[in-house]
Image 1 (cartoon, helix red, strand yellow):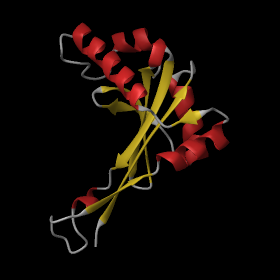
Image 2 (tube, rainbow, N blue to C red):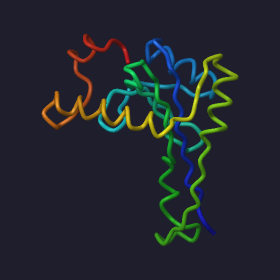
Image 3 (tube, one colour):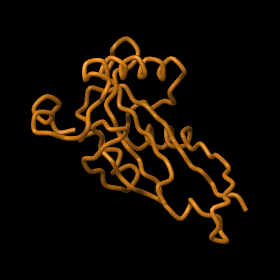
Image 4 (cartoon, helix red, strand yellow):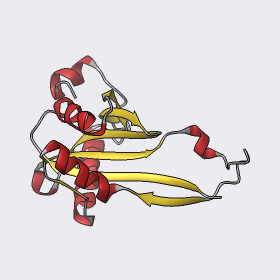
Length: 152
């Protein structure tokens, strides 16, 4: 029996503070976000249905402000087959379309699935940040970050 590898990726164009947006998403998904990290960058993070979901601020196409919502299985039990062995087969299940529709209905914001152009713009912005940090990227929250970026 295969395990289900559930994942999601959604975007919304917004100038709203990330913490406020995360609170709206949390209300829509019946979960609570807290300050955390996603790929070594500031994020609002929550757990729901065994998924770790993260909301991150991004620079989108043309420099627009975008909030990215991503999720993946966080339940460690999914690392093992039902018989307890580590010989696991997975079916990939993308629930992005459902989450986009649900969040659009429940938050009143126009969520969308990212395109190849969206991903390319995010990669380009990330390269710029890495260059600015000397190819290291941020390592976590500091008081200076709080002053620069607000309450993410």
